[in-house]
Image (cartoon, rainbow, N blue to C red):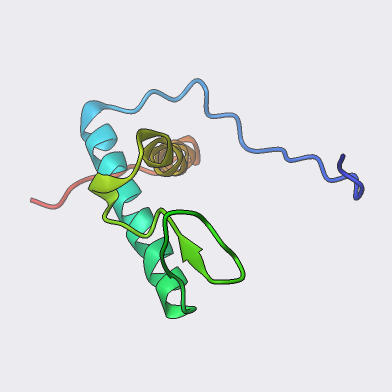
Length: 98
């Protein structure tokens, strides 16, 4: 139960449809999100372990993105997709340099 009365209110991006090139970017972003997360954990002394153990600082997701379970990849993809949708919804255009 939420005891501090916080109610998340993310921007509604359900009407935003990303073109394929941005979906490709979302996958690249998802991999980078994982890399940033992994680097942060490792900098804090975490290592790979078959089970997450906060006391021992082990985590099963400290592996290359390609080796993550699909459920974990989906979490990172969703973060990336929603970020791109937010940018588009805010009126910005994303263009790849030639």
